[in-house]
Amino acid sequence: MNNLSNRLQRLSPSETLAMSQKSNELKAQGIDVINLSVGEPDFNTPDHIKEAAKQAVDENFSRYSPVPGYPALRNAIVNKLKKENNLDYTAAQISCSNGAKQSVCNVIMTLVGEGDEVIVPAPYWVSYPEMVKLADGTPVIVRAGIEQDFKITPAQLEAAITPKTKALILCSPSNPTGSVYTKEELAGLAAVLSKHPQVYVIADEIYEHINYVGKHESIAQFPEMKENTVIVNGVSKAYAMTGWRIGFIAGPEWIVKACNKLQGQYTSGPCSVSQKAAEAAYTGTQAPVEEMRQAFERRRNLIVELAKEIPGFEVNVPQGAFYLFPKCDSYFGKSYEGRTIANAADLAMFLLEVGHVACVGGGAFGSPECIRMSYATSDENIVESMKRIKETLALLK
Image (cartoon, rainbow, N blue to C red; front, side, top):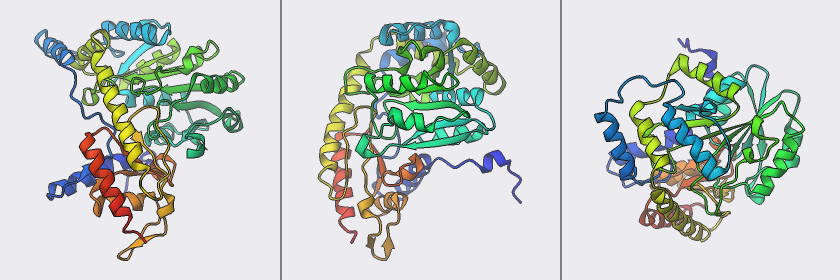
């Protein structure tokens, strides 16, 4: 008997987590699997951040914090936004949560209701459409292929907006493609959005510091967009703090207050010790962030070079994040030992079970002709995984 709510039955499981679990099961059987499925830096949290956490434990930061986070952390975020992004916010316009994932969901649950449409450019992060569905909204998928570097155009955006459109989710640098919107491209989208003031932008900027184009650009920088944009960010990717679970939003105070109201009813404030660690991340030295960015850029160059040598792969050059999203549909319909590849999910499973490399099929990201590889791993793993993928795909006839 299935007595689950309709809400849960509408929800799809996370394919990225499923592939990671499958690769861990094979590893447990003693199989040497290289995992390119998880979007997680392979670096450790910088020492000065860990020291701040230890100090917080010793100073008994062990009680409930205010729902939106400690004032000291929110003020540190205000200073970060001013210094790095030239954006003016107050502490009352900041709300911290249990990771940027919760921050995105808070904003969607706060703004979106039944009958509302949310524009989700594809390729998209797996959870965006699911969160919209959770809020009883309708995801409107706007596709951008590799030929346009996986970025939507102002004309595509204009065509997707209806009287029911409530929000646009914009992720730059992008998971799963690594594409980065330039200032000019964002200005083009802003020009369209300024004609539709009922549409809010949820700007997921979690990969802000992992970019290879020199400077991050936020759509909130345009005066006409500031009151219609909610920035989502956090410490997970830039500071290698995925497990610490601290994200934040910065936006209009009425939206932030609403998110606080929502969060106050189902999680309250995020982990007290993690908040003190995040405060140190934002106020301390930024040298480790740049060291990690340089390492990711080196790996980006390596994986792109090797992927371009794989027959049948169409590869773009990601400008941020730590993902490669090659187009691989030339292998669809091919077979090996009675096993036929029908789609990217089949191809990802084939690479895992035969080649012992874990990737994620692009269908979960709204682009069924691609697969996602994370290069947040060592140079050695990148070289070996690309060798295995090349050899394994050569088996398909």
